[in-house]
Length: 311
Image 1 (cartoon, rainbow, N blue to C red):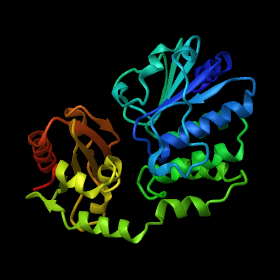
Image 2 (image 1 turned 45 degrees about the vertical axis):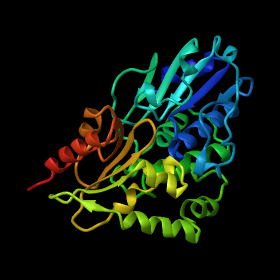
Image 3 (image 1 turned 180 degrees about the vertical axis):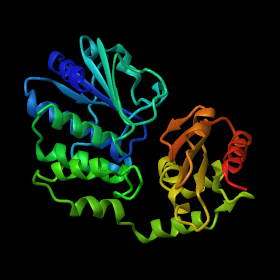
């Protein structure tokens, strides 16, 4: 399924790589990994990465985005990674490119690019990019391998989620053939200062439950401002403070911003993606998100999630 993608890369120059906004380890890992795969195998090509800042994943090497003018898109190939909908793409100038292509592992919600490579059997977009490199006979350098490995680790929940398969471990093993260390990866993913631990405790104390034991946290705009945390750290960063509570199979974190209410939905058992899609979002069967208009819509979503639970 990678033949056309490889041909697009062979023909194009320059190549500009996009991913979703508010990047996680998979978005950045696939972006950095693909950039270095292309540079390793096609050194004559100009390759750029664009998007908003790396945030908490700024520890990743080469995670600083390129600042390029619109003129660079003339005749370019824009590759979009780890993104299921156009409104989630960081830097909408991809539409200025002569050609567009996408690689993604989310549930397909509609065509975004002229060339589409999407496959939900991969635990991460990084896994898909790794498979692309392996099947296409492309060389890896250590930085590409390490970046892709980080995305596989983070999107699989450290190889814990049920999206992890034999394919996941085979590709991770292939990446580990490159000389890179993992100690610093896990340090940055797990290490927290004491203040961060206390903040997590604050969120745990805010957990509430519906009648059928859907767990949820609702963060008001005033509370968010008082915390002096970035939105990503509150929304996606705190949703899994509700994971592993006995008897809880669905949990959701609502976070008010000036523009909307961000919601992060998770489940250990149910496919919550249709609920996210109903409210304009998307993602995976057991990990999705959406942006809602107000608290009332958030409570309507919560009621829909509650209705999914077995009585």
